[in-house]
Picture 1 (spheres, one colour):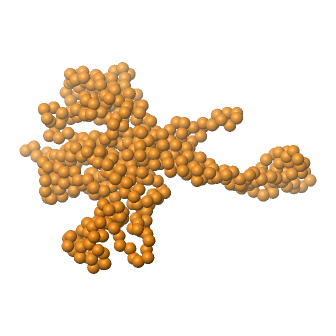
Picture 2: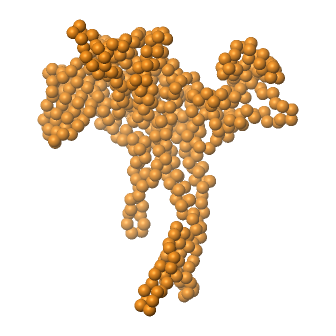
Length: 499
């Protein structure tokens, strides 16, 4: 009996229809493909076969794991140190910041985004362990927890195209021939979040529910205790299951091309070594009168032995050795394939051009364009995630209040950093590019990074010899004889836009 049949039976015992959960089985095939790319285990690319003239032999290509880099890059872009949560005032915000550290809130968000963007969907599940309850019903002590739930453990039970109203989080264990499922069902009833926990023991076609009539444990909260993390992308694979497509679903082709090209590059470099083939008689010398031979010198990475008849060749009966022509190393041509495929993968997954490329961008204008493109796509994901994270924050604050540490989450604000550049030094370099591009002024630069007022910034620029017009236009005044109008941009070429 599979898990979908278990859920359907459980639904019937509760008077609910959970039959739609089995639609997930159709979606699994797409997720397995994405997982293979994420793990670098793609049949036909990383796991392949070749024919040597006699037999087929399996071999493995090493993966550059570009899909994993894409998912990790998106998580870092979204949940940097400058992503923050604020409550109604500073006092409540500080309480939540303390809770953040206790439960590794940021690390869990980042990890959740990595797996959510890799597999289409992940969830963060909030809970609390209560130490003790007094005779008056108040809680004394406890600990709030936050767990990452990956795709394989998430089963939507009741949903429309985009929204899940009832979901099951399931853990499966094997014990003495039995399949034991721990099932936690989260649903919304009368504007309250209800959690029901079941244990299902399966043996063959029989299933035993512990507490099917009476739930093992039921809890009711004001807020749902989970949030869903998935890319805000069009779902090309199904219209009936509210899972998002993987962030690199459209980038699978270039991800595969990069692995193939990288493997070809490694082979070219490896095969580019000069090889000297030596007849076996030359390699061995005769010792004693009995005709025994010993090795004359050790083999190494450039010497190879061949049968003496082959070493002699057809033209000379005494030829002892010959050299193989060194193969051409096609580094530049193969690297262009890698470079172009990386740009293609970045474009297909919504990252700015050059984000994953180790080669510097050509011009400062390209840097600014790449950042703008990346920011537009980043904003789309923020729109979806903001609501989900706000729900999670409210759940965490409710749990914290339940264990005796009240936090008022009546007002929750999710604050995103405007720039994907979060390192201050890198952000300054990008601002210099924006000054050259005319979208940022020197006055604004000094106000932002030096904390000066508008008047103080203008006075300082004038003191340094800059005109008021250039301070606002972004045109840089160059020393006499300098014919490089984009000097500031050239200085940061290849450094900005790396996130």
